[in-house]
Structure formats: structure tokens, C-alpha cells
Amino acid sequence: MEKPLLVTDFLDRARRNYGDQEAVVTVDGDTYTYDELGRRADGFSAALQERGVGKGDRVAVLDPNTHYHLEAAYGSFQVGAVHTPLNYRLVASDFEYILNDAGVTAVYADAEYADAIEEIRDDVPTEVFITNDADAVDGDWESFDDAVDNDGAHDRPEMAEDEVITINYTSGTTGDPKGVCRTHRTETLHAYLISVHQELSDDDTYLWTLPMFHVNGWGHIYAVTGIGARHVCTRGVDAAEVFDRLRENDVTYFCAAPTVLKLLSDHYDDHGGPVDAGQDVRVATAGAAPPEATIRTVEDEFGWYLKHVYGATETGPLITTSDARRYFDDDSDDRFAVKKTQGFGYLGTEVRVVDEDGDDVAEDGQTVGEIVVRGNQVMDGYWEKPEATEEAFHDRVDGYYHTGDLAVVDEDGMLTIQDRKKDIIISGGENISSIELEDVLFDHDAVGDVAVIPAPSDEWGETPKAFVVPANGDVDDPGVTEADLLAFCRERLASFKVPRRIEFVSQLPKTATGKIQKYELREREWDDEERMVGEG
Image 1: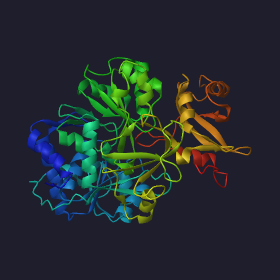
Image 2: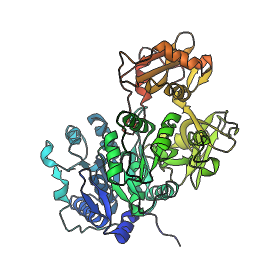
Image 3: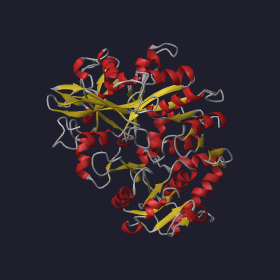
Image 4: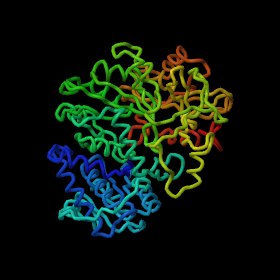
């Protein structure tokens, strides 16, 4: 038997089986059951259709992690409209580009961010503007709560699993952002995969620290809902609030970038106190591995279980996990070596590391290649960008998405990222991994945060430069000198890898998900140069 895979199934299941169970804890601490969440989604569906929005139309959602985002997303799905979440850290000109590129018909925007949409409303095709607090926004905006105050009657069109239902825009670090097209099928299968690999169950409580706009929060708007678990909403990441929510709402699972884990660790060092209410807690982190010291704090001091996963907007995102418990003992330090890898592929996911000719690299933990992947959770393509889609799937190997991440593979088949292609530093013909340098600097007690990029060099073409945020937060008196940090690196690295310069800064440019935006540092560093030697 074949049954279409549709994202509407997730809320349908929750309403059918968990209707009177708590679904959402709002930012203000109010609660909704799945019946109540469903009725509000129905109301938004009806409101959209009353305003002429139908199947295939794009509905943008500009919202931090609130219940309104969940209601707007499912309300859009139910009428076959394409959910188009927006990064709330962007500026008006970014929104203008995306709304025009996607041809958005309607916008829901949180009142805190709606002014940026109001600024460009005459320059976008959108005609429907809805917010959670119309009185707080200049211009003609409708109230979400008023709009959904109806009988919820709407027509659900026939939908097919290969139809686009979400467009997630990339961060645009190398030019204009691209819209990643995700179908009912890709979203559904990715949600199934994280339900298995992240061990979701109906008695879980999920804390929204990862933005919902970020590939729909790694698919959790689907998986958490469909499994019948609870959503706990926040308006961003605040360390004190995270610990409060863990204690007060019995949170059992959340996602946190390595920088967020460091934020929690630092807050704990400064304030101490209980980190949770004694429940078992799982936390997932993605991308480059956190420093070992951070993992030790999370697991040994907090008592949480860390899962290290990996992926990209285009890949679902999640495609690998290092949660391979046959390879380590939970009570032994040997687990750190495994947890710092990106691990191996999710179920049904083929992940390879290939050389320039498209051949698999040796599983020796040394030979570097590019990660390529194919799986049912990988995007179909970029919105109206066939050439970019062609390049993404047919560069080194036909039919695989090319991630741009460089990695090695060990004898167990586990991947370890070495760098982004654009972040590899090529100094005097030698390839230097910025991640390796950052890991070393992170081990110094005076370093709170760090980013390493290629900097111009008359002698070597380019050399490593480190931007360091002092652990004490004082740029003028960081508690360590540049010479001290360089000596620290020389004791631990080959001489050609040691940074030639260190600059103390108060903060690093980051995305809403906590990833460091190295391109901003590179652009500043290479402003007077014609090109970057390594094209970083």
C-alpha cells in the first residue's frame, strides 16, 4: 500500500490521539492543548482562504519561537500554502529580496519585527499583513487573534507528497540567499528520522532554543507535534531562562549550537544552582563539535546526554550522528573522541567523502575530501535557480548534494569535519584547518570564544589570524597577551599552523543559530586586497 506523505498528518495525528493533552507552553507561560492548537490553526487556514490565499501561494512567517509560528505554519499547510519562514535577524532590504524572490502572498510578523516589513511593504507583492499585536505596529496590520476568531471552516485541497510545502532561505553568506525547496515527502521523512535518532517520545518536552525558521527548527515543528510531545516556546536564547525552563517545565530535550552550550556553561560557572529538576535531559548540538571542556561540563556536571549531529539547510538538515553507543562507554573519556566526530549517516542516508575526482577518500582519518550526500530528506532544489541546483548536485559526483564541507573518515567510517572549503587556509602551499586552530585556542582558560580566518600575507599569500573574545569580556585587559596565546599554540601545533596574529574583540558576528559568520571577518580583513589567495 502506498499512502502520500503529507506534513498535515503530524497535527492531524496529535489532535486525534492527544487532543486534550498539553501541546504548547507559550512564552508567557500559558498553555494550549492539541485541540486548542488545532482550532487556532484551523482559524488561520480559514482566514487565509478568506483573503484569497490558496494552494501553492507562499505565506511568510517572521516570528521568534512562539505559538503563533506553529499556528501560522500548520494553518498554511492545511490550505496547501507554502510556509516560508524568515530569519528575524535580517534587515528590511533582506526581507524585500526574499519576499520578492519567493513571490509571497501573505505575511505573518511578530510585532517586534513587523516594522522591518512595514518599511518595504510598498516594494513587495504581499497584500496580507497580520501580526500578533496590531496596536504596536505602524501601518495597516490585522490582528492574528482577531483573524483566527472564526469557525475554522476551510477547504483542504488535494495535495501530493512531491509538492513544495516549505521554502527555507539560506543565510546568504556568499551572495543573495537561496530558497531551499522542501516537499511534503522530504519534510515528513526527515521528521521520521529525527524521531528515531533523537529518540522522541510522547512524554518528551521540547524546549525551543533553536529558531523555528531554521529549516523549521531541524524539523521539530513536525516531529514533536506528530509524536504528541510538548513544545515549550521562547523568544530566543537566554541562559538564565533556559535553566528556568528546564527546572519549571520538566524539559527533557532541546537543541543548542556549540556557542549556546558555552553560554550555558559560562552562566553556570558564574551563578551555579540546579540546572534542571532532576529529569533525564538530552541535548543535540550540530556542526563543528564543541570543545571537549564544554562536553565535559554538559555531561559530567549538568548530567545531560549530548548528541552531536550534522547537516545543512539543503539536507533536511540532519544527515549524520555520532550517537553510536557501541563505540564508547558512557562513563569513559573515550566517548569524547567519538562525540567530537560528525559520526555516520542517518538511516536511509548515504554520506560519502570524495576527492576532486569523485572517488571515496581512504578511511585513514587523514585524507581530506568533500562531504556529499543523498537521502530522502535532501532538498529537491533551489527556488527558481536551476543553475545553482545543477551545480549543487553534479559537481564532483552526479546525483549527490555537495555540502562544501571538508572532512576525513576514520577506520570506523565516522566523519570528522576539517573545515568549510572556503575556510581552509592555504599558507605557503600548506592547507591549514581553522577548526583545528580554534579547538586549540578554546583550551586556554582566558579564551571565551574564537574564530580563525585566513589573513593576507606578503610572504605566504595568506596566514591564520585569530579573533578572540576574552573569557572575562574585557578587550582592554583580557587576562592574557597575544604572545601568551601564540606560545600556547606553538606547544600544541606544527609551526606553520600557528596563527601569525591575534586580535581581541568584544564579540563575534553570529547567525541566529549561533554560527559564527566568518565571511564578515574575512571581508574586513581582505578589504584592501584584490582577491583572497585561498578564495576564503
